Image 1 (cartoon, rainbow, N blue to C red):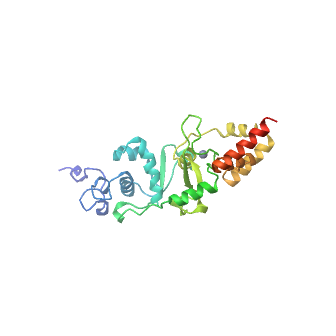
Image 2 (cartoon, rainbow, N blue to C red):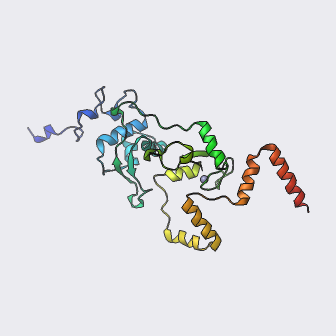
Image 3 (spheres, helix red, strand yellow):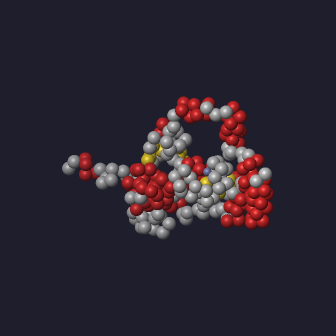
Length: 253
Ligand SMILES: [Zn+2]
């Protein structure tokens, strides 16, 4: 008889908490509330990665059979359930790796907590306050990105949900789809700092100082011209007719 008879088949012995009431590991369970990418990722991470340990999106995707285009978004959703991890977004040297910092909710703890919902009324208040434009890039809904796709707006958290930020007017800001994604992206291109500094150097002094004020305010400020256009766009038909009428009169002078 060899010692190998006693080596468990999987190579890992899981404690009994890792098994769902249906007798299989939580991430393989078909128990209600345990299926779906987010619960399965949470269960797998809970019993396969220690705090301070590393994992990758690819690993989650391949182990759990989650489609490529959804894996990254689902992984980010973990943060809405109290999970904390470092990725290349915070620490570019990590590359593909993520470092687990804190366990959050997983199905063995009970039903999935509700994510904070933003009511349509609150979203409308956020958009109105911000002039119906992304506070980060200044684009309005319906305008086009450089690639020709249409801009859509969303209410983004200033302090993230997972870090205790509330879904309240003072913690929400208008962000377009692309700015919202890149603010939360786990991987991104790692630009050369020298090249970007050169780009900043090439700006006029006044523009450099304005850029500094945007960076400190964490949003771009609106010029009087921008604000006049916002007032026109959001002012309704009477305002728009009056403004257009005035401008066409002065145009011909
Ligand atoms: Zn934007």
